[in-house]
Length: 253
Image (cartoon, rainbow, N blue to C red; front, side, top):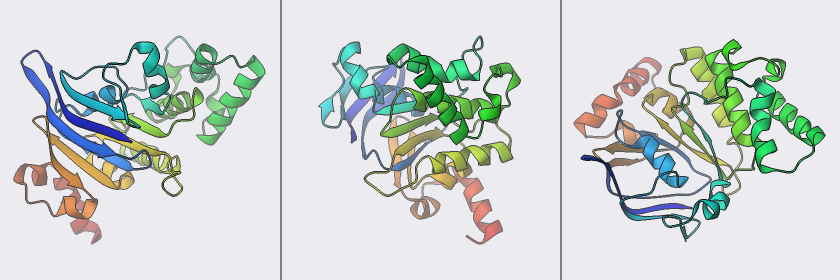
C-alpha cells in the first residue's frame, strides 16, 4: 500500500503539494488529474523516492521511505515500474538494447536469458518486428510500447506508474496505448497489477481508471469514481472535465 501523510513540497516559493493525504492499494487503477504544474508527476517521483518531501511522511507497505538511503530505496523501487512522458529511450541504442539495458545493469542473467526475456516482452507488446530499429525510426506509439517493455524487463512490479502516457499521440494511437494499459492490469484484486496514471487528458483517464484524484493548488479536490466525477459540483473541476460531458451527451453513457 502507498500512503501519503501530510506531505508538503515546494520548489522555491512555488508550493507544489500542501499537506497532501491519500492511500492507494497496489491493485487499484488510479488516474491523477490536474492542470500543468499542479504536482501530478511530483507525486510519482515521491513514491519512488526520487525527491523527498519538505514535510510529512510517505509509507510503502508500511515502511517510511522519506529517510531511506539510495541503496535502501532499491527494494522499494522494485515494487514499481515507471513509464516517463517521452518514453526516455536511449537514442544511441536500438529497441533490443533499450529493453535489455536494465537486465544487463541489475541482473546477472546470461545473454541467452536476456534475449529470451526481451523477445517475450516485445512479442507481448506487439512490437517484435521493431527489435533492431532505432528510437528515431519508431512512431510515438511504438516508442511508448518500447518504454513499457523496458520498464517491465528489470522487475516484476506490483504497480505501474505512467507519466502522461498518451500525451502527444494521435487519438488512435492514444487509444491503443490505453488498451495496452488495461491489458497489463487484468485480473482480480488483490493479485492484479494496478497502476497510477498521471494525465491531463481526461477522456483517456476515463478509459482505463476506476478511481480519479484531482489535484489543485497542492491539495486533493476530488477523490472518487467516474460516476461521482461527472456529478461534481466544483465549477473549476467541471470545466476541467468538460470533454467527459460532451462524450456523455454524444454516446448516451
